[in-house]
Image 1 (cartoon, rainbow over the protein chains, first blue to last red):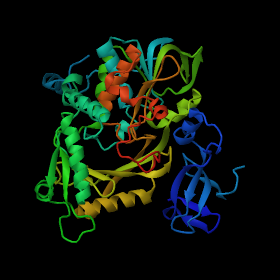
Image 2 (tube, each protein chain N blue to C red):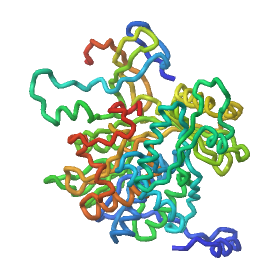
Image 3 (cartoon, chains in turn orange, red):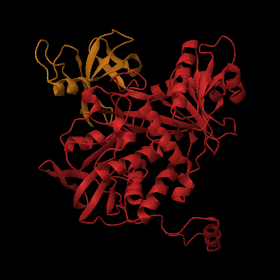
Image 4 (cartoon, helix red, strand yellow):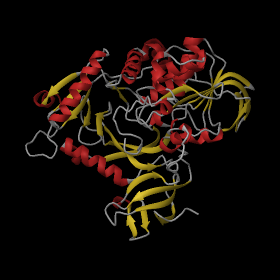
Length: 89
Length: 418
């Protein structure tokens, strides 16, 4: 089982969280022309990295906040967690 | 190649089974091939077999990083079905069903195809309506489908929970009588043996490290066992698709996720169908050895681990026990996991790419095993003819740009939910 350190609540079990996918995907800017390719990249295309992967989780059965987690997709090791509004450095 | 038959069995029994021919060779990679298939799983092996058999292309190599049949073709729950609603999925799968029916004879290898039928249970009136609609769609495409009421289901699987006051009562189910199971390892080995006998080189323990692309064309590939010149490459690597796509500077509508399966200790025959739970995600059948073979949800987050976590397994088995309470008395024998190439609409991709000579076969989600023969057949056609067959025309990569998605379950792009 994964143990995820919620930046708001501390270390909690995976069972309290739900997954939200790749955290590096950026929505194209509003009120600007968006090419089909950019839109498709946002909606469908994913790198799905093997190794370190920044992803979104929601602490659904806890504080209900969305957070960012850096996890290794091959070993499940978790390196770092951030609040949703903190930038990935 | 030595033909397998009752006579060859008797003959080899007399020599203590010590003089059987090797089922396939262990060749050194040549410098040049007409076609290289990357990935020695079920789909890759089937593709090579149909390239040789249907298109007479035999200067072919299969490059496999590990050993053939060591990935998902050896890790699945062996279910074969064509109970799809959309025409593209239904016609493709039913074409595959016809290949399954004659596969043992075709390959001269007993794949133990067992058309025992699959029952998808319904737990509400609304779900019965949905299944009626799906059943009608199937029948319009020439696929057998029977809508069963509660009593009809009880007659077939009396061990399911038919008591009153359960959370998910069984209202009925949709049955495809011609669906079933097959021995998954035998499928890989059968295709490998026949492909090898027609001249295909099966190269194991050989990792692809890079591609040689120039002028928008495939020229060759680099491997851990040397460079190979080649005009056409078929990419057939399931959960590793994104890793190789990155080497080609491609980003695909695919995410890799982990799916677990498990078997119980063997018990006497109790279940002679494949059954799925309709109020969650759980499926079960009984193997010839007597083990209950079970699976369900993805682990729910991107993973290349090829092994699972317990919370999902516990969740899936809770569903199983809700459906068939006797399962709680069984001991678990083994659990394992495989990595799935989850596409953004739940349907696969078999297509050409923007690179000339590069062909893509991926996005099977967790329905890859049943598709093995049809996938190999259509992928071989796409590679040999350099154009898609009408059976896989719907499985284009471009559908994500044009909006012609095949979202059978209507779940959208959250691949870890589907």
